[in-house]
Image (cartoon, rainbow, N blue to C red; front, side, top):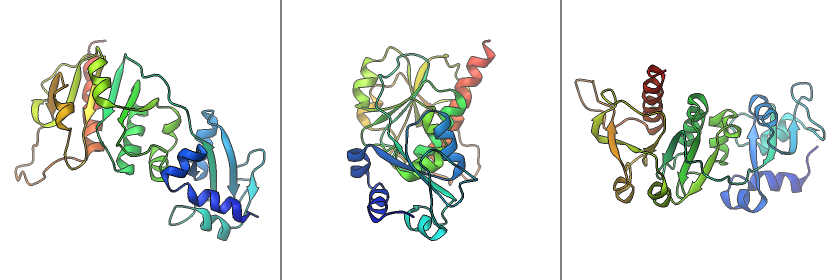
Length: 244
């Protein structure tokens, strides 16, 4: 059984201010929860409708009705857990880094975190006005990758001014990504879903790169930022792979 105070705490974590004040976030579903636990993220509490599916010391078995009451999903998925957020780590200055300029959609951020995990990105750097990585929708979209990708929020302009790495920006106008030879180390900047990369960040780019449009109608205005990130990461890795 779950208490009223526990329900109040869990439901409050839908809002960033309470995630910040408590240092907690919500993860749902056995697969996501197991991955976070296996990667060493500190567990606060675990609620499940079936202890045989997922268990941990102190796990609480609750009814499906109770789980649905605390779940942020349309259909609750067997288990819900609270984890402690991770403290910010020093930003790395080597390897392949993805930098996000005001990417505000939680689904996009979650997918980009998962892409960074897949492509072995050294660091994900987010502007302070990007979506919160502990938003429940972000956590679900990462499918556990949040635990494996070093992520930092900072003033993006300051970071880009200080880095010694070449800085590439995903833009609508620039050199074709398919004609570039990319280095093993560098920063890929991706911009806001509606407005792209901000003017102050554009001034700090080493080079603008673009994904050419091959469709004859040319009616699609732009690619989804997560989709574009996947293509650019693939091209960066392909360049470094061919050098091996």
